Image: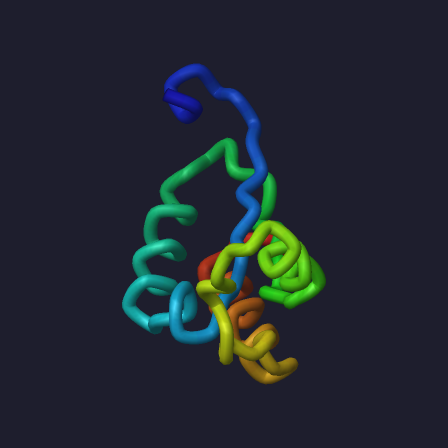
Length: 89
């Protein structure tokens, strides 16, 4: 509908190693994004653990325990795929 109505939009993508960085998923995202004429850019949001303590405070198990933030190489690889697809990041 955004395409049909010519509504500009931005996409925020959280890169979580082991969850949202599968090469096929990223390639599918690039294919989809390349077909969106009103997509202005993808805002790449690297996973972090800044809110981890809130889970403990609420008495909840932190479901991403053991997941590390993406490396600079992983971030650069994602940005390179965007660049190759002609998508601003």
